[in-house]
Image (cartoon, rainbow, N blue to C red):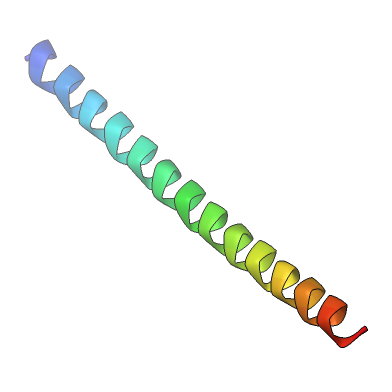
Length: 49
């Protein structure tokens, strides 16, 4: 049954790639939020001058 075991390996590979993609999306999202906060801080600083 070599066919089913290779299919299992492919499924595991896909799952690990999906997990990596999810982690990357989370990281990108948090970086985006940080950037937005930085931008807001900078804008409020400019307005106070």
